[in-house]
Amino acid sequence: MSNYGQSGKPRGRWLTIAGFAFGGIVLAVLVAATVWQGNVHTSDTSAAESHSTTAAFLQNAGTEAGIAAPLLRDYVKTGDVKLVPQIQEHATVAIKNLTGAINEGGVADLTTIAAEGSRVSDGLGQVIALRQSGNVPAAAAALEQLSPVFEKVTTEVTAAVTLELKEASKLQSSADKADSAASWLLIASIAWGAALGAGVTALVARSMFGKRVSKTPSTI
Image 1: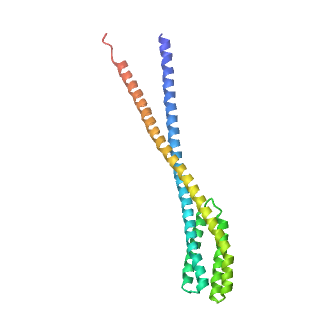
Image 2 (image 1 turned 120 degrees about the horizontal axis):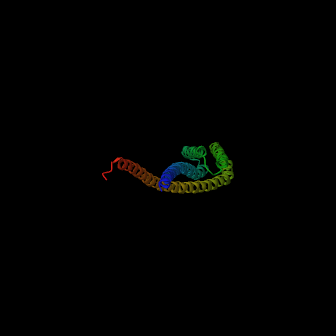
């Protein structure tokens, strides 16, 4: 009986150590998963914001170009020189926003839009120059040739905005899921760590209590 008891104690001790080691590994995995999900949340949120910014730039570019187009038609018809600065201002803002979208980047093919936008900008300057020279028929003809290009760019910009917003929504949804997972993993980590800590405390207290009992002299 004595030998069995002595051999059983080391075995039980090793099982206890193995249990706490496993608990420590589980805690480390939970903490690592929490950090990972937190990084995913940060990364996806940043990417979603980038795509939203690109969409905003494109929307602004489309809006400004949409304002400049009817002003250009009015200028060709009336020759009102007061319209020229307004046309140029809106065209400049449109180009700046398009450049901003290209610099920000996105999933849409912005290089094609940039190339078509450059054609529209050049065509706009040509129409204004022809009208300023007094050649109304040539200015009207140049405007008609420019119209299909402008409509194409408008369509491409609208499609690009939709694509960027869709991507932003998908990434934001992923970020929200990662944030939720990180929160639950953090709670699990805290709970598991507390339980593990309580187990270690109980084991230490039991060991100390056992030593004290063994050292107490028997009165029998």
